[in-house]
Image 1: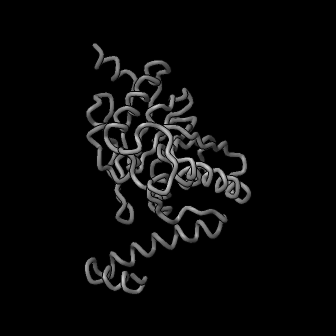
Image 2: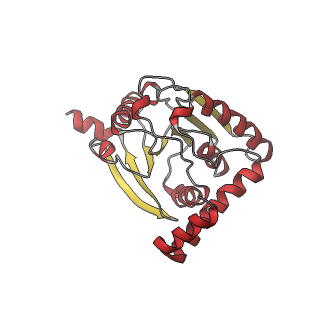
Amino acid sequence: MSCLRRLQQSVHSQGIGQTFSKLFVLFHDYFFDLRHGVQTFDCTPLTHLSVRGQNRRYGNPYRPTRCWPLSRLLRQLQPILPHPLGFVDFGSGKGKVLMLAAKHGFAKTRGVEFAHELCELARRNIARFQQSCAPNAEMSVIETDASEYRIQPDENVFFFFNPFGDQVLDRVICNINDSMREHPRRVIIIYGYPVHHQAIESHQNYRILDRLCFGGHRFIVYEGRPMLLEAEAA
């Protein structure tokens, strides 16, 4: 289907305003890639990728988090984020979220991704990005299944853009909880396109701080505290 045909269908089904909003968001993504010499724009199905771990069936295709909504979100959340900022993106794909987080002041960002080709592309993207922006930020991509990633004590902001099903999401939340027990600290979870939000909300030590929507992209922001874990265990 041609771009013009898709545009006509969008205007017909969603109206001019909503269509313009989508084009505005997509333009920012295209410009981000062009400006930094990176490749993050296109979606990639899992069938085209070599996947590490046993949870391939629970994984979702790579769909990029859009620049403009995430930038708006990070700016709005700055006053409530814990410090120092240690940021982890689960299902980090081509590295866009890591780059945007570094651009918005996160000195240390880590991506967890189980698809080998996406990890390799993300590392190339990050190398190019750091030539023009955030050269001092510590950025890395870990190739592993998200459920097997060991949460580090300096990590306190966790991002998900619906990368996998509730089975894997629940396991990752349990790993975050284990880390909070071992190294007590306040954490923030940002969940974009929150299809499986119940997997987080079933853990009593999290509360919703905000529900936000930018350019049609929905996010739920959670706060987790270790003292609530202790109360739950009691």
